[in-house]
Length: 102
Image (cartoon, rainbow, N blue to C red; front, side):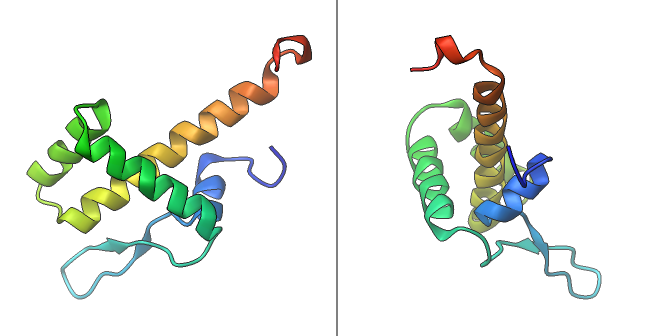
């Protein structure tokens, strides 16, 4: 994948990389407004579907909420997790032999 040697580069491209927004002793991260907005929106929709249905994404979201994060922070974490999954699949598809690709 050209330009995305690491998962965090892909996350920055999709706008799911966290940006530190700490103040004083409170350590927080917020969503990036940069990156490809279409990819970010697609990941948002995937995250919402994961949250609404009994999936591993919903379980992760609930664990994150139970860990003390707000709903927005938990959604940001899930979007980043989905971004990493998409990146891993893109890498796997890139290394798949050409005759197996549709």
